[in-house]
Image (tube, rainbow, N blue to C red; front, side, top):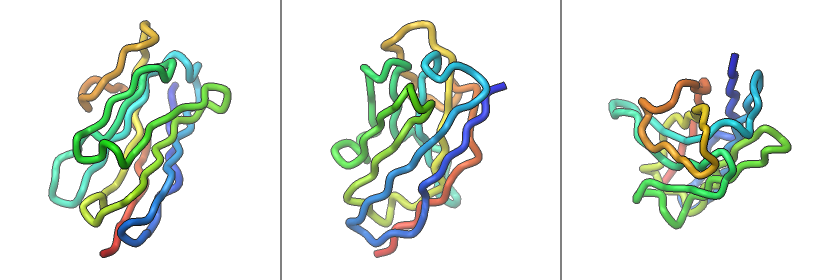
Length: 127
């Protein structure tokens, strides 16, 4: 059974930075492609960033490109989302997701491609 636990959310001023972490347990982390999504109040869940199981391939939503960086440490079973130059519109609950992948460079950017989800962590950016 895959379990995902996010951490690192909080309150930050506009222009600040946060790093989210998501630890996977229960299965071999390096077999899973990982993604980050977010959901603001009254809005649908949206894609933020994703990486392949090897970390070689990454992709980002246009709204965060150049400000956010996804990375993973397979030795620590953890995926990260470094968020810089945060804006009030980045305020949301952030979720990490995992999907078993058989190819090292495959990435998934749709929420319905992921089978496993964390509980979410709140990120609030004040203006």
